[in-house]
Length: 339
Image (tube, rainbow, N blue to C red; front, side, top):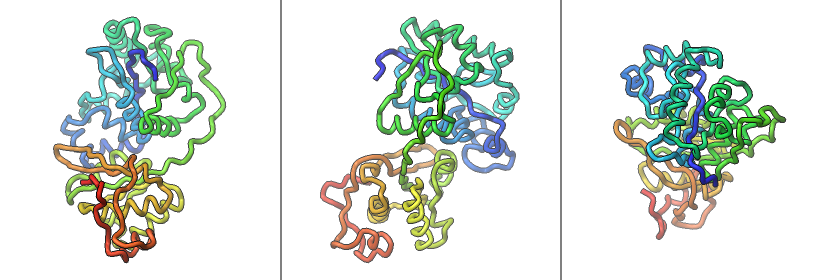
C-alpha cells in the first residue's frame, strides 16, 4: 500500500459514441437523461454511463484508494474545455454538448489552457509530497505532456496499464477495488509506455441481486451501472419463472456475470438465487448484502463476500431447490443477518 498522499486524475470518456448520443437524445426518459436535462447529473455519473466498465472501474478504484492531502478532493476528472473538476460536479446537457466539441489534443489551447490552470492550482495546494496518479492513457501525449510540465516525477500511473485496452483496465481496477489490493505506480517520466499485451484477466463472475418494490428505480440503476458488463435477468423481460431460470443457468454455464432485476423482497426469494449462484460455481464468498441508492430510488444490491447464511428446510439437491422449490422453500439460518 502506497502511503504517500495522492490525488487521482481521471481521463474523460469519449463523448462521440452511441451511448453519449443516447444520453443526449431529447426524448430519452431514463433517470440519468432526465437529470442531465435538469442540470442535476454529475460528471462522474455521466462519464460512467458513457464509458461503461472503464470509467466505472476508475470510480470504484478511487473510492477505495484515494488518500489526498487535507482540503483537496481525492479524484478530479479531466473535462475538455473546463479543466479539472471533482466527479461530483453537476453538469447540464448544454455543457456536455460544449464539452463534446472540444478536441482532446495537447496542442489545442481550448483543452490545454484550462487543464494547466487547474493543475497548477491543484499542485499549489497539494504540496511537494503529493503524488498525482493518472488513470488514463499514456500511449499518447494528450494527457502526459501538459501534466508532466507541472508535476514532473510526481505524475505516476499504474504499471499494469501498459499494453492493456480500456475494458481490461476497467476490469482490473474493479477487481482491485473489490479485493482491496492497490496497483503499483511508476513515474510517467521515462516510463515504458508501450508493451506486449498482458494475459487476459481471469473471468470474473458476479451475481448481483436487486431488492426493491416496483418503481424503485432498479431497471434504471441497471442501465446506468451494469448494462455494459452484466446480463439483465428480469421476470418482466423473460415473462415466466422457467425462462428466467433458463437464462440464469445459461449465464452460470457460460461464465457470464448477471443482474437479477426482480423485487426479491423476501428472504426466501433471495436465498434461492444465492443457492443458484453457489451451485453454478460462483463462490459463496461473493454473495453478501449492501445497500445503495437513496432519494428518488431505493435499491438494495446483493453481491460481494460472506457465505450464504440460508439453509434448506430439508436435505435435497440445491439445483432442484432453486428450479422447482421442491424443498418447500428456505428458512432463516441461526446466524443470518440479511434484510
